[in-house]
Amino acid sequence: MDDVIACSIMQANVDSAQAGNIGFVLKRIGNTCVKLVRAAHPTYPDFYSMKFFESLRKGEYDFDFPAYQQYLQDHCEQFPAGVYAFAVDTRNYDLTSHQSLHDAWLERFCISEVASGERSEIRAIQIETSFLGPYHDLKIHLVYSGVIEYSIVTPEEFSHPPFGAIGHGDLLIHEVSLTENKQALIHELYFSRGSVFRIVCENFLHEIEILNEPCST
Image (cartoon, rainbow, N blue to C red; front, side, top):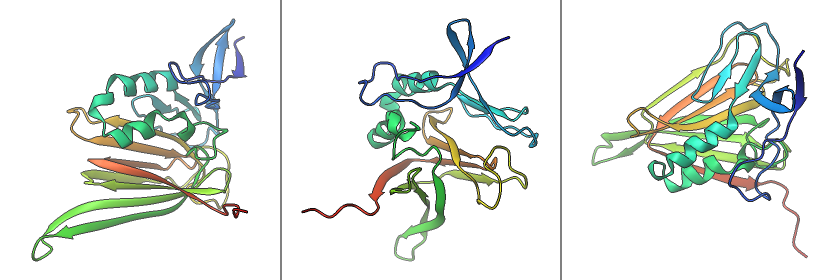
């Protein structure tokens, strides 16, 4: 019978100080880790897939992180510089990182129209999001500009633990990719409730707000 073990995913071609434990469970056959898998609650039957992520009907989810990072590197020139820097930074996924979006909680999701022109007739969709970091010592802000498309789906029942009165639950996975024509960005966020936020846009900004910063002496 195959063993299921917790493994550290080390980013290839990245300084070891930046590469970390992405914290997924890998299925091991012999001495080889062959599949990213993490057990979850099997009650919610629907599933969702991204380019490198899939929430399975059995209540598990897979995320091929090395292939995802290779995809980003292969298309680096087609991403805005700031978006690429955000997407390839393993600290934004690493379980041990304070700035990781994994296990972050959504605090704000605001849709607005940015107007210009003499009569404010030229209008563009903007989305602003804020998350409380996994260690509750910082906030993560993402501002999407030139939004072309967005969707929000939230099921009645939770797909993964923890359960209870916790809103959308923990943010489990997020993935940045390009549209098929390579003309726009896609940022998809998957929460433990099974909620999925999918935003297609021209660009987005990433900022970190430190909470309770120690006073300088």
